[in-house]
Image (cartoon, rainbow over all chains, first blue to last red; front, side):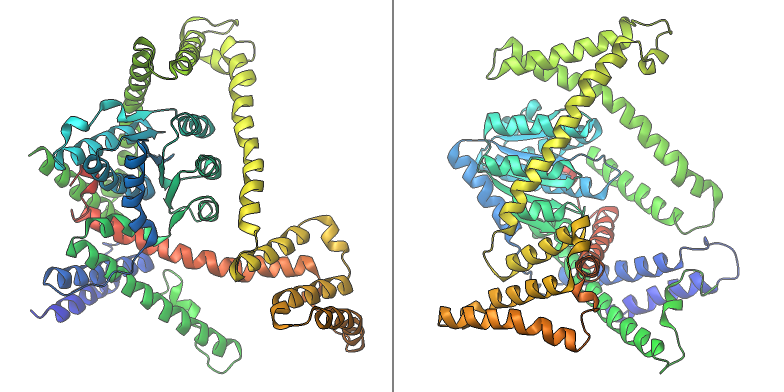
Amino acid sequence: MKKSIKYTLLPSLMILFYFFIPLPIFLVGNETTFVCVILLCFVVEYFIESAKSGEPIYMRPIAAIKAMEEAVGRATEMGTPVLYVPGISSLDQIDTISGLTILGHVAGMTAEYEANLHVPVCVPIVMETAKETCKESYLKKGRPDLYRNDMVHYVTDDQFAYAAGVNGIMLREKPAAVFFQGKFYAESLILAETGNSIGAIQIAGTGSSSQIPFFVTACDYTLIGEEFYAASAYLSGSPEMLGSIKGQDYVKVGCMIAIVIVFISSMLNGYGIIDFNIETLFRTNVVK
Amino acid sequence: MKRQIAYFLVIFIGFLTLIGHFINYPPLNDFIDNDATQWFDIISGFAAFLGVINLLQLHLNKVANKRKHYQYSIITLFGFIIMIIFGFIYNGSNVPMGPHLKEQGSAFYWMFQNIYLPLGATMFALLAFFVASASYRAFKIRNFEATLLLVSGIFLMLGRVPVGQLIPWWLSLEIYICLIFAITAGLFTNKKTLFYTLLISMIIFPFIILQLNLYQLAVFKIPDLQEWIMDVPATAGSRAIMIGIALGTIAQSYRIITGRERSILGD
């Protein structure tokens, strides 16, 4: 089957099946989520397939991602460790998982450059995952001898006690590169300002929209919003991962067009030029 | 093989969770909503022991080998042992062990109230100073964006304090005039011309606004202006970021549950 037909027909059939099947197979109230998830997944999958078949993909240079290797290189030259903070949340947060995927790449870089990596962790289950991630990265780079068990270590579960512990590490060890990648709350500024005061190159990334301004102010580079989730795919450089980012960007363009349509339609409806109220389309259960 | 099993588990549980969100099958919904989260809590609970062991190992090693800054490790170990004693061995109150953790007379409670909480509050209070230093850097006028940030920051601060409500319309107008001249100052080659134009504008414009009866406009009330800044430009910006985050989350989750994102397993 032709690729474009496959990726148009299949999601359409799934959506039709979801809405028009007479049996109560599906939960009521999740219609909008279902349509969004299906559309996004198929668009992403389409571009992954395109990338795999050799279609060239242009990636906008992201300064923060480019600076990661420079930061590790700087730490190596200065003979100081690289500090990686994976946030204070557990593995049930996608930000923590994203932080750990980026840790895999950073650990690969430190293994390559023979730099010292230091990962203080707030949640024990994240510590175990981070340990495995680092161990595998060092093994993959052919430097298992450089991996130390105390590279990733537990500090405490408490938010501000953790901030105090990490600040202490920063002030004592003076790392040349500090990475903040994960879920952060009020401690973000305490950590980032301390890192700034010791003159470290700081690269932050988080999905916590309320913490982004603090990181932008105090860090040298910040991965904002979806850049943070795309960082791992970007760093991997594999075509299928890059294809997924392209797909994501196309969905974003779709969202922008939808916003403009909704805006114009609402305005026309508001002034009484048209009777149709587009807002009703976005209310869940409107179809059933 | 070990890695293949890990991939399989991630993919299987990932799809199961996704399907469970849409399919109307009570055992599956129950598993997703309750059982799976309970399993996660149990695993996390056991991992806590690993955390404690790791902490002890790390600091005991530091002390035993007298590594750099080992003195701090002694304090950490001391605190750890003290709290273990007060939590499991020494009670200090009349209630039995266990409930004594929340009993006001117990040694554990005293330590928690008088040492742990004040230390946490101290760290939190430090945030105020860090906000001040970060704001200073952010508000430094370097370019147009920083200027915008400074101006909107000033309006927000003024609008959110009681004195902001007392600022009369004509003073707001004078602030706007000053701001406009601050931005367009570069266009004036002669400083005298700039000064006299500013002075004349500051005298004439309040009368014009008064004559045209425009002084009741919301733009001349600082609290209303700050509300508009928060409701319109700030909300628009944060929603743009939120849409990006939502799309990124779905795409990242898709990459993980289809087994493409394997960096977490070191690939």
